Image 1 (cartoon, each protein chain N blue to C red):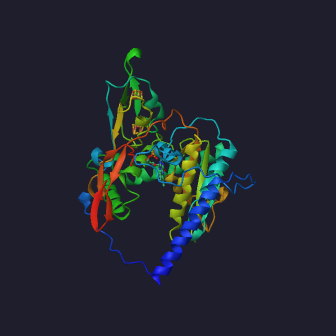
Image 2 (cartoon, rainbow over the protein chains, first blue to last red; image 1 turned 30 degrees about the horizontal axis):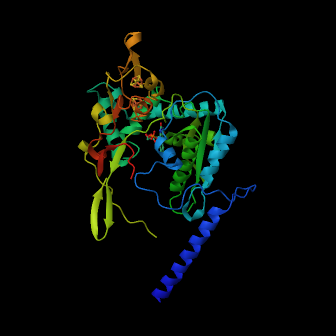
Image 3 (cartoon, rainbow over the protein chains, first blue to last red; image 1 turned 30 degrees about the vertical axis):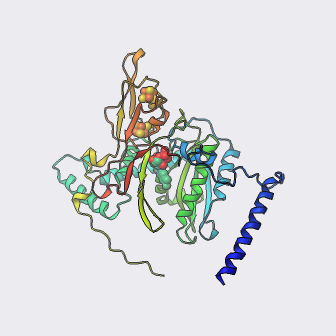
Length: 280
Length: 113
Ligand SMILES: Cc1cc2nc3c(=O)[nH]c(=O)nc-3n(C[C@H](O)[C@H](O)[C@H](O)COP(=O)(O)O)c2cc1C
Ligand code: SF4
Ligand code: SF4
């Protein structure tokens, strides 16, 4: 039984490989929908140590851009990168997303002002270092902050707390004064963990943008907007959709994507041939 | 399908960051190698936290951290723009207590396998 199955599969694979060669040989057919894209990468394995291809290059040079030129990004470029987001994988292929593109200066300013105000409130309530040492107020706020920290390990991580402080004192902008902001909405009824699908969409968007010379930055702090019902309504955030993330888009100042940076390596537990290895 | 019950880990107070200790509350350090810096200003321009500034005579400009340095977000954009690689670097994460990073190796530039 297994033998015949294996045999059938082998035949299928041979047939498929022949078909792939044939496909590769055919010229690209021009259609209105780009259904037949020319295969740009070879099907054979690359040599060890081979040069980076275009996708790898985009991944390695992408940086989060937090300073933008004033020039607006042409609308068709924004449509183009969102189109790449549309073709990302999703759990059950249910594509639980929707987009809001904000290119209106006044609207972005309104979003920025609201988020900054929330950050000011947050630092006043949790940053006990603002109060004199030894004071009762400081002790009370410190106890409160520690309790909050213990229950909200992710939100009270030193990284966002440092950023919230900088936003509150006006040194750091939430939307980085970008000319275009894309809000990624998630349909909460999506299969499994729909926010992961939003992560996939956003990844496609930022990589496509990088390949086109645009700068992007994810903005998790955009979530703060969710507590402003009036602004949400005005923007068009309504159930079953929730604001999941935002991505700023614009032309970078300087050229922070010209070189790669170093990054942490992480443990990889590698099981093969009955052996367990630890790689980095 | 019911989610497995997870006991919430109780984090002892001394494992939570203390905001008045900069080492615990801030998460990155900036390293400037002055002899390599040629004063091109690029890093000060791209630094999103605006914590870098130029100083010194016009023909020998160098970059330095502004006096109040909190807010480096370890983005390493400064390193990425500095053409003389390695001139400028951040010593990114060094979290303490409950946020200590685990199962990590050294920092590496992209490796070609
Ligand atoms: C989901 C998500 C949310 C983020 N939110 C913010 C944000 O609110 N503000 C910000 O300046 N950067 C934000 N970032 C960017 C990260 O700080 C950045 O990706 C990280 O520091 C790595 O740097 P790089 O993107 O330049 O490689 C976010 C990134 C992700 C993936
Ligand atoms: S980018 Fe490099 S050379 Fe230019 S000012 Fe900064 S540290 Fe100096
Ligand atoms: S790592 Fe980023 S925030 Fe820190 S000094 Fe460099 S450019 Fe500025």
